[in-house]
Length: 130
View 1 (cartoon, one colour):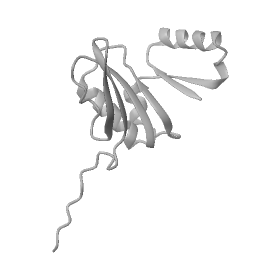
View 2: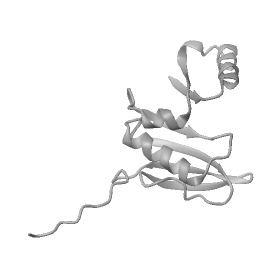
View 3: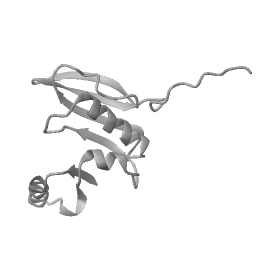
């Protein structure tokens, strides 16, 4: 199954229309909320693939926070593949929880392929003898 996350009700209707035209109504869910809110909520389960392509301007810090929240709240697992499309020239937008496996130029931006980092963004603990 596929889950779409969209905050604009007009676009939600367009997604539903397209799903119906392709015969996929029962195989997809459309969640009407911002991806920021979704990422900060506890996930009911994890996804194998995340495609991130915000159609509106979003700062690199905001993108990184959302991607880190997806890991923190269980939306993804250790083998989830992230495909992120970003405009501009800064591919370092993944946050601490993701590790890029490829960055490819695409139009006026780039596409990043990434997986969840082995340490999930947590700093390594230093062992101190007391």
